[in-house]
Length: 189
Image (cartoon, rainbow, N blue to C red; front, side, top):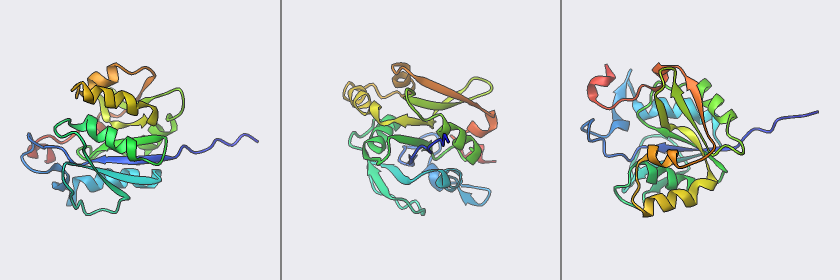
């Protein structure tokens, strides 16, 4: 009997961003009466074995249970540092990275993403039907840590630029509305 073993995955929840376009901390913003971060958390929580929260440069109380708060070691490096910090700390080979401003993502989509998390893939990220990729909704393999460290040391902080340098990137096509992110308070309406 051939039983497929479930991939163990950690969640890296990104809540430490500057939120400059939004004007205040996005994860606290309410959508349909619930903080935005809670929408993302609920979509992922039953699929992962461990939850890490990338809080940026200072501790935050996000109002949700999690295993570890992860601080950036490199200030101002953006989400690439959050990915590196969580991936370095994760107890699993794979990290599901989720930005807190993607409240429309579904558990079903995340389950499909995790199903693709296996060798030789290194990054599995979502792509909308209209071609928009979303690297902050994806699975990253632990083998990327040294490459992330090099990119950060060389001050190459762009996530897309990093992804372009990686082989074995897989894109999962998902409904466009699931990848709608919130960048401005008006996006909540």
